[in-house]
Amino acid sequence: MNVQHYKPKNETLRRYIDGYYFMAKGKSKLPLHYITFPYNLCFVSTTQNSDVKIEEGQILVTPSEKEKVVTDLVLRYTKPFKVTFQEPTNEITIKFKPLGLNYFITNLSDYFISGFCMDFQPFDDLNTKMQSIIDIENRDEQIEHLENYWLSKLKNIETDRIENIIADLESDHSIADISKKHQISRQYLNRIFFNTVGKTPSEYRKVHKFRNALLDFQKVNNLTELSYKSLFYDQSHFIKEFKSLTNINPSLFFKSIDSSEDVVWLSI
Image 1 (cartoon, rainbow, N blue to C red):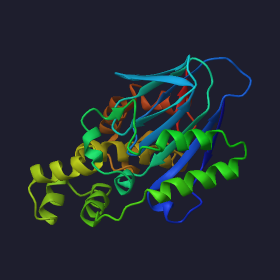
Image 2: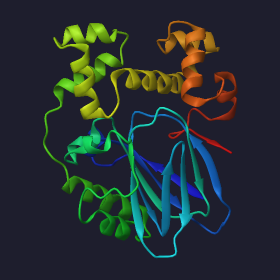
Image 3: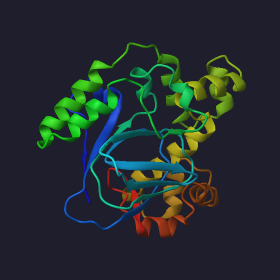
């Protein structure tokens, strides 16, 4: 199955969307299996002529007997997901930045407890519009229509406080110090952060360090150097946290994936 990754062309959308990828089924009928790892991004995927099941630890995409599109949302996972496509299919996945979806969708926090939604329809015209975009053969035209559609849903909201808290979490400040800086209790910090981002501050920081380690891996010589560069206390702490997010020892993990890719998947 052919997968192509893109960054938003529109400057406004770049503030909220990290990128998107297009899957095209092509001629092969072979199934596709891969493992995807925790991210602080939110994923909105529209799949054509398929049924999608999201269960504990796995996403299964099977051919549908009906012609249709289905849109699913994944916004909170702190363990690896096994993804299986029984047959290649056409799909568009949008990767929203941690606060990104809040600028388009009202009451996003309704989805935070489960962390995903198998029939995500925040707008009445979402599936109809995404179907028409999938059917466009020219990729540049697809991207133009996709961006114009999401721009039409953009809202003006205030997120300065949470943006500042995110910046603090991505530094080496303790969560206690962050609470003190913003003059709120740690409990209140947890509540407002979860209601906006869909993760606790501790979950967000843990995943952020993991993703930083993937980016930094190309720049270091060994895991000890990587652990300190990624703001872990020491190598043993790094290995423990890494295995909790991947179920794999970091040495084996980095031998098995290409950390320079836009989306890090482990084919199985």
